[in-house]
Length: 195
Image (cartoon, rainbow, N blue to C red; front, side, top):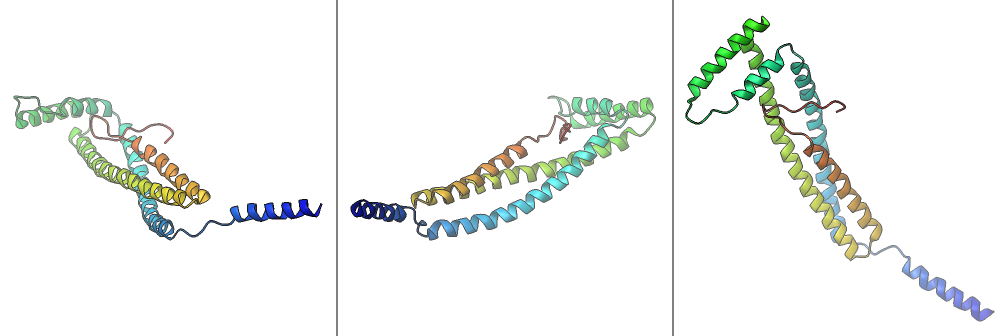
């Protein structure tokens, strides 16, 4: 009986030695601190971006509900590119004539509405550049956390590796969300119900 008890104690000692807290991994911990600091900055930038995007999408939605917008959008789409052989001046004159026709049909300034459209299109272009930059930063952050994951796995620190990989997955979902936005044929973000 004493022998069985001694064997059990010895077995517990061996199992206990295997279940000890993994040794420190200074390389991974240092890289994780860097990644977390970068993530904090990225999170702040994403929050700012989404605030601006929400306001922009609201402006586009409100603008697209303007009477006559569909007619103007069709004009813009039709004159969006200069056909080969035509010069820019004749296209500009065609657009001016179409805006005059729109004004006569809808009883308000087509030029003014077109100017508002250009302003929104400029804001969308700026937002699109920011969105693409954020997607690049998200990919870079994923690489940083993957590096931490591999460093932790190589040091047999499974829990820390899983936590780092969880961040990679969250960043991937954020990237997918950002990639779901795109500009339409006339340079505005599509306004999707429920966003």
